[in-house]
Length: 174
Image 1 (spheres, rainbow, N blue to C red):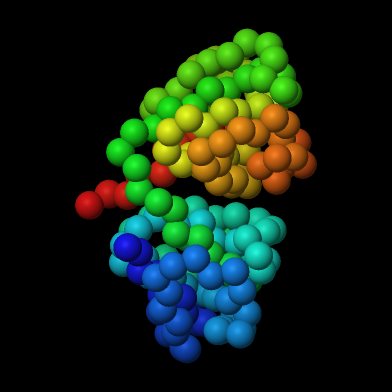
Image 2: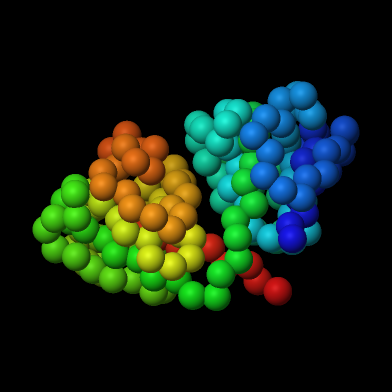
């Protein structure tokens, strides 16, 4: 079970909307989002309705303004509660369609370039758990949620390039 509260103004002020499950269209609930409080669970927020547009990963904590979650604007139009899992495992491939060198990860990686000498990854097979892929090292840049499943090419996870800088397991801290 998760709980997230969206506030229209910075510093947890203004009209608030509480949510405890996936919501494909938050537009009728609030006009803008400038601060968020996550009481439980891990969440992926989306800039547009129907789980599309820029994505922002949040775990338990307080985010007094949208820059705190690396937001590009005050537009949050959908959200998804990410299921909790105890184990994480994924395979990354150097080329699309699961070709080229393959590596298996079970832990976070803050720099794929430093660790594996890859600056681009073209396909993923998420075997266990959910992961957040970041465009740049040190968990910065555009974010993409990878749930268990197959991603044959970077378009499958919603990216416009195969540039991957870092990967993080979705883990809620209790």
